[in-house]
Amino acid sequence: MLFLALIALIVVLIVALYAHDVNQSQHTILRNFPVIGHFRYFAETWGEYMRQYHYMPDWLERPFNRLERSWIYRSAKNVSNYISFGSEATPSFAFRNAAFPVLDEDCRKFEGLQIGVGEGPGACAQPYLAKSFFNISGMSYGALSHAAVTSLSRGAKMAGVWMGTGEGGLSPFHLEGGADIVFQIGTAKYGVRDASGNLDEEKLRNIAALETIRMIEVKLAQGAKPGKGGLLPAAKVTKEIAAIRGIPAGEPSVSPNRHRDIANVRELGAFVARVRKIAGKPVGVKFVVGDEQQLDEWFADCVKHPEGCPDYIHVDGGEGGTGAAPAALADAVGMPITLALPMVVSARERHGLAKRIRIVAAGKLVTPDKVAWAMCMGADFVVSARGFMFALGCIQAMKCGSGNCPTGVTASDPRLIRGLDPSDKAVRVMHYAQRLREDVEMIAHACGVARPEELAPWHVTEIEKGIAGFRNTGAQ
Image (tube, rainbow, N blue to C red):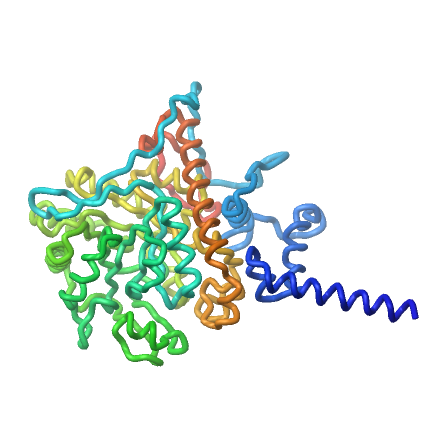
């Protein structure tokens, strides 16, 4: 009798726990996988106490190790990021702290930088004053669920950061939060294409007329797959997504491996000038560095034809991520940001374009140390996609292209998407952006400068190669 009563009590407790899990909104895993999802949180919470009994150090996981993910999770939840006993990190660079750091009362916030010029060749009608040095990189609706895009849009507005659309076109979910938006034109020109896949100027003009569209980005390539276009499986190409992109529903959405109307730097300059004239807003170019000589040819053309000079360049490292990419490209093609960024900054200086072209850096720059490193190397801004995915609750399940993401971030299954509550996750996006900026400012102050934009190459030193994905940082 006692045994039956015990069984009944256990059943009641499980039912109560199930009801709690499916009705709460803070933990997507518990909402999507009630009861059994607690095992993950148990393992996560007690893992640090059991560390001496297992053989998987926190810094060995890939592509983002547990130390990096934990920092983002804690920041997004707005809980303490203080650590005890000592650091487990094994960085390849160290910041040179000043003997007399900047006093707290003398510290200054990032004052913002203008992108685009208001007069002269290459001028645009509406330059953009970007108020945050850390922003959300482009992620397409379709690759991300509507709940994830909505969360990012709302969180971006709260944090005062811009948000990229990715190459999949502009969706209502990008606009929902009222955040500043960077509209990306990929090789398939989704959202601004005609029936033949060419640029439809009227569609672009209508999108650019929206107040929250602050800049236009021409995407040549992304770090995860240089020389390969985007891919969205047929199962994800719903009628809604097809309408946004301007393609048939139910068929795979495959972008060309490059713009058919851009085959050299002169054609690139002409396209940039054309887009800026139509949009009246700053135009940038996203690319992956392959050949330094091509950089010089491009920047020389910018000097010779200033009307085709981009207002910013988005340098994506070869370690960038995406929903689906061939392993051969993701693993071995494209320079890592640690090589690419110093190379681009140096080329910009050689051609006297430092005041004309802003540099945006990307490529696994998800924690304050790496963002501060990029600013030391000369980046004006840093953007991240996967960092903000972690803030949404991504657990690095590596199922982005399948539509079965257990946290709903990249899911296409309505049941899984339901677990992601935009009201809760938008706040986490805001906290992550704020905490990262605060910690970059803290590093700057330790180095003896009042503002993060004053960080310079001499504030960081390479100490070891081949650790945590950083090689030959270019630091002095």
